Every structure is written in C-alpha cells, then in structure tokens.
Figure 1 (cartoon, helix red, strand yellow):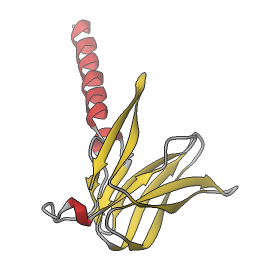
Figure 2 (cartoon, helix red, strand yellow; figure 1 turned 30 degrees about the vertical axis):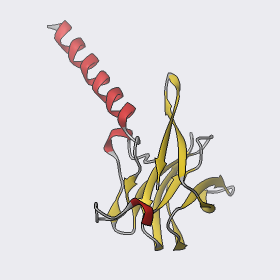
Figure 3 (cartoon, one colour; figure 1 turned 90 degrees about the vertical axis):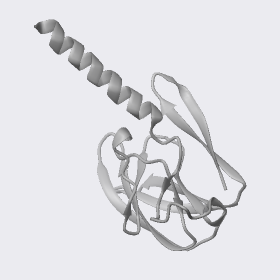
Length: 153
C-alpha cells in the first residue's frame, strides 16, 4: 500500500512540473475580445528575473492569474489606451501587491515592469521600450537552461 502513495506523489509532482513547463509560452490576454488583432495590441512584460519576482495578475478588470505557474504570469497583451496593471511582487523576505498605471499604451509597443526596493517595500515602475515587431522573454525551467519564447505583433 505504501508504494501506491509514493506512486501518487510522483505522478502529482510530474504533473505539476509539466504544467509549469508549458505555462507562459504565450502572452495572456489582458482584455476579453479574443478575436482582437494582435497588431493593435501592446505587450506588458516583467523584467528579466533577478532577486525579485514579478507576476502580472490582472489588467483593469481582467484576471491574468495563471494557475500553472503559481500566478507569476510574465507577460500579457493589452489594448491601447489607459491600462491598470495589477502585480504581485516578491523576493525571499517579502511579498506585496501593487498596481502600475500606464496612461497611454500604444499598439506595437513593449512596456517592461522593473521591480525595485525602496527600503520598506518592493516597488514597480514601467519603461516603454518602444515599437517592436516582436519581443523575446527567457522562461526559467529549473534545473534546465531558460527557454527563449518570442511573441510577435
């Protein structure tokens, strides 16, 4: 009977690792119209992993929480105009949630969220990287090397 519990635990761990491997391969949509043309969208991306972890959990009233990677959604597509990006920020000692407002999102642009520490809280700000044809992120796949994944407009 003990071997059944061990087998179930191994299968559960394998399933969770497999789901995490496939999470984040495409930017999630931060809007409800699934047929909206990609050329009329922008990307909001978390900066490359450092000592801080950034996860995009929502855009305006649309949830982008991805259960397969514990809510650490690294990138989303958004529509032009004013967008409120909901974030979860963490490091080894603290966790906080914050909103970043981008007043004038432009189609084809990439907006990178940078996480910092102000002495009391983790903070987030964005930088407009400008208009691009595509953008590549590097998804961590421990213990394997990060995988480059590209999204196009």
